[in-house]
Length: 184
Picture (cartoon, rainbow, N blue to C red):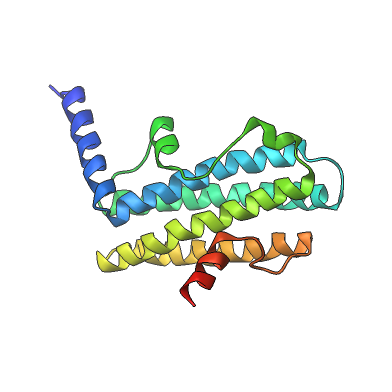
């Protein structure tokens, strides 16, 4: 007889240990959680942004972003399973692992602010993606590393697209640009 409670507790214990170590699998869980929540935020923005040039961009780019992020979630989860890593499969895990912030009030913000919030989320995700790449390479999880590099490139391109619509320099107002300045 399968002891579901014992298996569940073992997985929770393993997840806790791996998130404190951290491992590539644990860091990819953060990436997956961020992508999942980001899809919701994109949905909110595309539904509630007020009519202007930014809304046209979001109604075109938003569904594309959601589809691409859903694809990355599926592919990342596959690589987690392929390596015997833990796969986040509950909303509780997603909410625990995400580092993105959501708010019901975002839908009332001006369109430019809603788009910039999504761009900042792409930027926040890069921090987890780069750390996951390093860990995957260190652990010889090359398929995970390759997929994460692909995700990194795609997100950088989306940051540029969004910043262009806003008339910003590609790194304007982003945390990663501030971190780069701190290193000088």
